[in-house]
Amino acid sequence: MTTGEIQVIRGLADVYFDRTESSFIDGKKGVLLYRGYNIHDLADNSTFEETSYLLIHGSLPTRSQLAEFDAQLRSSREIPDEIVGIIRAVKASHPMDVLRTAVSALSAYDPDAGDNSHEATLRKGLRLTAQVPTIVMTHYAIREGRQPVAPRSDLNHATNFLYMFAGEVPDEDTASLMDKDFILHAEHGSNASSFTARVVIGTNADIHGAITAAIASLSGPAHGGAAEGVMKMALEIGEPENAARYVKDLLSEGGRVMGFGHRVYRAEDPRARHLRAGVQKLSEDVGEPKWFGILEAVIEAMQPYARRGIHVNVDFFAGVIYYLNGIPEDLFVPIFAVGRMPGWVLQVLEQQQNNILLRPRLVYTGPEEQPYVPIEQR
Ligand code: CMC
Picture (spheres, rainbow, N blue to C red):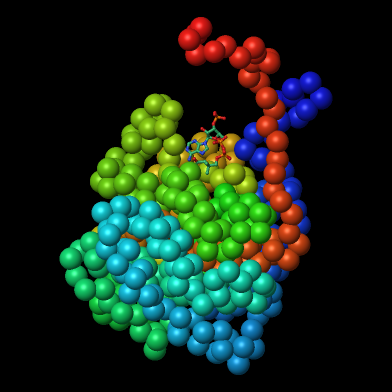
């Protein structure tokens, strides 16, 4: 839309507002690189800890760098009792609201509170990356009426996350699929939540504020809520043979198929295929292959939309994986947040390093200047 000489780009679609060394996305070809490394290589070969180091520090770690980084994460998982108390006080809220509240409150207990130097922000970012899973699972236990399961420092990030959920150590396949899911969600350029974090940092506010705001941004269904939406859809569809009719009815009512479409990708989201294999295996392993069948039938029904650049995105398969692990639907977005932590930390650090106030403008379309009318004359 053009207003006089001013061009308004609603939603800032395809607007470049800065440079980044974080990640590269070619939406037409379906390519995603973290710090120059292809997401396919990372999903197949890396771990969440190694990918987090790569994102935050800019290069793949040596063995000793990785060991030190991992040790820092493992030793930072505990949350203060006061935060557990706050979680108890707001336990009836959606887990994303609880997470947002707890992350915000954590700033009061952080030893680096008030220090916004690069080093302090890095330390706070690592602590938050380690603490966010504990917050999510502490809340989950409390609202179930159970004692929270304390994190274990002898387990890796993904295994510990599932351990805190179920109270028992998951098998290797399950843990490795969750690890892959975290890698795939770890970073994605200037998406809504990372942009939100940058806007907050642009005012020289601190990382707890930026990540609190990013969590709020992620909580919306157009961003982080899609995996939950896909699972609701799959449950409503019920059987693969119902999928075509369901999709047709939804689209004819102007609805959107969750887990499809993306602001940047016009080709298939390269992250999706790594979780597809996971859904297939998991649904066969648990003796419920129909879940994979339902998703495949939805993809088939959405084929005509592929011509318009609407393909599956990363969240299409994620929800069913969580569901088959027994994880309740309202924990799906918090899982996205757990995975996205290193990306948010990276975006915060990068914004801080070359900071600028992010302050775009709006074209005014309200009334012209009006005479002020005293209240008794209105
Ligand atoms: N189902 C049906 N139609 C769709 C869909 C969909 N999932 N996505 C886009 N469209 C249509 C839309 O109706 C519109 O059609 P028309 O031009 O006839 O009005 C056209 O495609 C363009 O849509 P848009 O909303 O202008 O495009 P956008 O770039 O703003 O939308 C999106 C991006 C992700 C918000 C949207 O595709 C959507 O709502 N998808 C479903 C939610 C979802 O899966 N979100 C997760 C995104 S991946 C995780 C992440 O990175 O956050």
